[in-house]
Length: 361
Image (tube, rainbow, N blue to C red; front, side, top):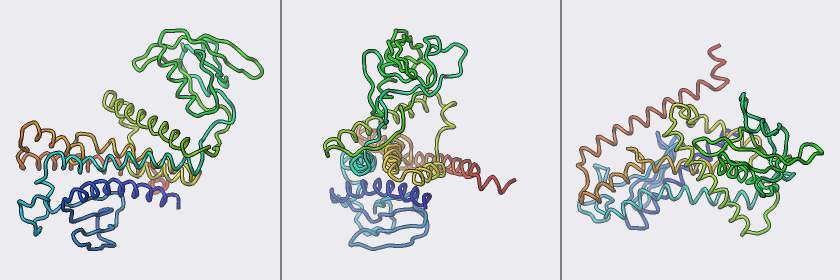
């Protein structure tokens, strides 16, 4: 059941993405002849006045079809409401609407989780030192920091029970490379004042410790709808920031980070574990995937929304579109590469599943 829940989450996010394209087109009077959730054989379909709505066998995908691409279309080639005959701005709105829909939906998912499930927070104030990095020379060890220490304050800032306190401490450390930071630490019944000097690294200061909330993590009800929107906005901002950082590391340090890229099987597996252990966290999982789906689609790669927007940018600069032959060649090459990567991830992650590995033993 948890696997079905994870697949359902992915299907909903894809539906939201395609719905963004559809609404942006129809609200401008642009012809749309197909709206499909999924790929493969049609399971259900409904023919509207202009658009065919369909649900297909494989839910991890979808598309919005325009009569521009249909050789059997009955519209005149110069029809002003065909997508290709619209100004660059109109087409740009349609192409980018899927990404915008995923981002907006992610925000409201986070607000919904906060509002209906509650705000996660630690049962005790402070930030727990979970572990020290296994290094011969570690600045935290040299400063006298030990595992299970609780940092109550750093650089004059007190830490409460919010889960955001961990990120707050990380930012203090990151922003003080090579500079001393005064720490107030609880170690059992002792209260200690230690000084640590973060090691300067490319991403900022580091002291080589693993951090976690202090005590158990429990949810409390929200005090008001304004708090739900505020906390949701903070979580949304943090996910955006981490996603940008993750994509940046993938580009600048591809060799080490490429192995961490997740395909559909791994995503479903993660979602299934979350659904099994904590159904409320599915909101956060869905928001996280929705934001990543938006970022992936906005990349300037052929066959993605970002690639289409890149063509529009070139067209706006040149004053005319690239020749159809060049566009089709680039799109086909990009589609083959993306499908190839998808199949590679699918095969890799499927063979790593426990029940599959047992078949080969």
